[in-house]
Amino acid sequence: MSIIKALKTAIAFEVEVRGVYAEAVKRATDPVGRRVFALLASEEQNHVRYLEGKLADFARTGKVVPGEVRTALPKKVAIAAKVRELKKGVAPAAGAAEVEMLARAFEMEQETSAFYRRMVAELDAEGQAFFRPFVEIEEGHLALVGAEKDAVAGFGYWFDMPEFDLEAG
Image 1: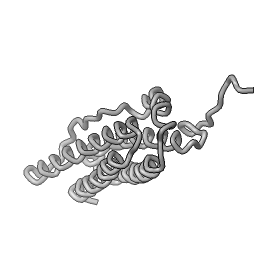
Image 2 (image 1 turned 180 degrees about the horizontal axis):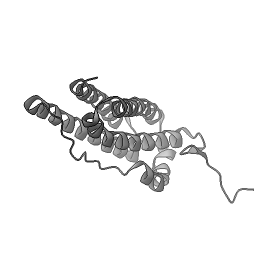
Image 3 (image 1 turned 60 degrees about the horizontal axis):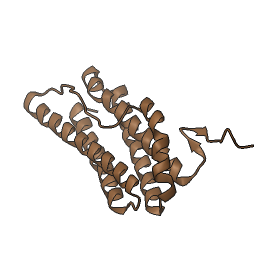
Image 4 (image 1 turned 180 degrees about the vertical axis):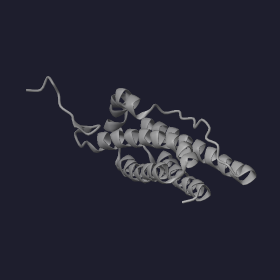
């Protein structure tokens, strides 16, 4: 895949997942859930702007120069330390809309993450350097959405580990 096609495909993924989060903000009944969805929608909008800017740069210069991809969310490893707080805030009040939207968002984040990993594996060194930060960012999104999805669905798992109460008999 060429870098230009990769950029256009990345923009399409980011626009689609941004739409999922924007719809989730409208449909969510829980205020914490709405805030989480709004933050993720904003995050994806920033990705769209960044990628569109890089596409315009490529049209002018014929090169894609990686820059800093800003994120308001912590990295995947830091999410584990904060996610229990989100679980306490969203899980009790989550309704069918939240569960459905988290499932859709999780699916989209999986697809988007897989695309970025594929670009890092397939593109030349320039393309790999450009898309590598997106792998980490999208994996963080995937971890956050997956943890939220599991919490509101009550699967009894948190970050792929069974939940249990040490004080329970």
